[in-house]
Length: 207
Image 1 (cartoon, helix red, strand yellow):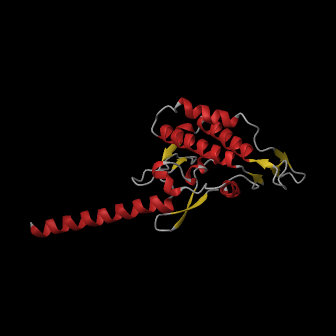
Image 2 (tube, helix red, strand yellow; image 1 turned 45 degrees about the vertical axis):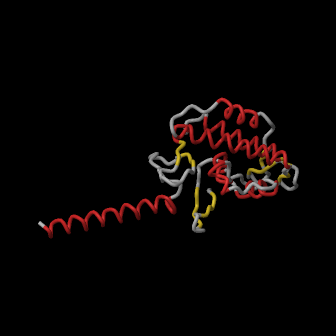
Image 3 (spheres, helix red, strand yellow; image 1 turned 90 degrees about the vertical axis):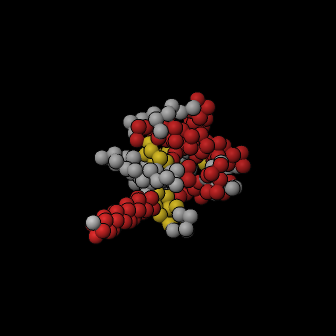
């Protein structure tokens, strides 16, 4: 599970936010998130769905109105995620936006003859963007109203704002990705220890 993101330097790394609804957040947003925007046209939301943790990848058609609705739901989820990560109660308008999306029919699931899980109409572009967003919103209801809500966190790096849910058994995850922010923290900590050790050595020589 997880998404392949790219650092400002263009280096790819894997980020697993732990839930479907939080996978929507790295697609962009307003303000400082605008530079990460990838949902420019309906086809972009289709691509996101294919790369998400939805399995098998649903075949959907998305309209311009549904794309706009996806951006609105994403904005609500961004604020809810950050608020929850910092111990704040989600804003009523954001909860209402999630509930509105979740009230629509979701992507219809079915049990295949071979025992696998699939979509009721997975072989044609029959599912809608509204059904996709309902599925995302229902995942948000399960997350924000479930046992892992207190584990929704923001990456501990000062220059990273990615939100994830810590589903690990010990519950001590701090970084969006050990490949990216976790590794940078290790490098900085090692450099600081070496510098401190060097300063102590110079002090002893001067005594």
